[in-house]
Figure 1 (cartoon, helix red, strand yellow):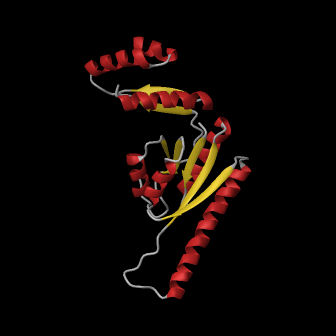
Figure 2: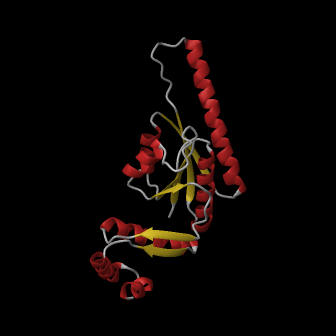
Figure 3: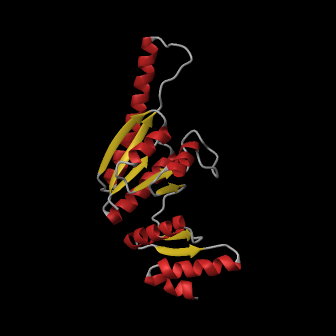
Length: 207
C-alpha cells in the first residue's frame, strides 16, 4: 500500500477517519492525501458581486480551517501529508481523485450535516457504490487490530479476502472469516476456499 485518500469535511467522523488513516500509514509507510471539496455557490437568482465575493471568501476560509486541522493531526502523528481541494459534487470529486493511483479510501460514515448514526451519508453511499478502490468507512477510530471478512464464494468476496490478508499482515491484524448460508452453499464455499485461500486458511476449509 502506497497511497491513501482521506476525504474530509471537518466533521467528527472525518477526523476519526483521519486518525484511522494515520494509524494505517504509520504501519504500512503509505502517504496520505486529505481532500476537502468546497460546495459550489448556487442561487436561484443572480447575487450581487459583493455578496458572492463574501460567500466565496467564507467558504475558502472554512476549507483552510478544515485542512489546517488535518495538517496538525498528521504532523502530531509524524505522517507526511498532502492536502488537496476541489469544488463541486463531493462524491464525484472523491471518485475522480481516487482513480489517480490511490490504493485505499478512508472516510467517515456520514458528513457533518447528516446526523443519523446508523445510516450511511449520501456522499459515502455513492462513493462505496461506484469506487473501484477499496474503501474503509469509519464510525470510530480503529487500528484494525481485528478484521471480520464476510465471504460467499463470489469473486468479489475472494478479492476482499485476499486484500484483508495483505493488509492484515502489514497491520498485525487478527482476521476472522464468516459465512452465513445454507448447508449446500457452505460446502461449495469450503471447496472454493480450499482452492483460493492461503495455506494459513487451508485448515479452515478442511474443518
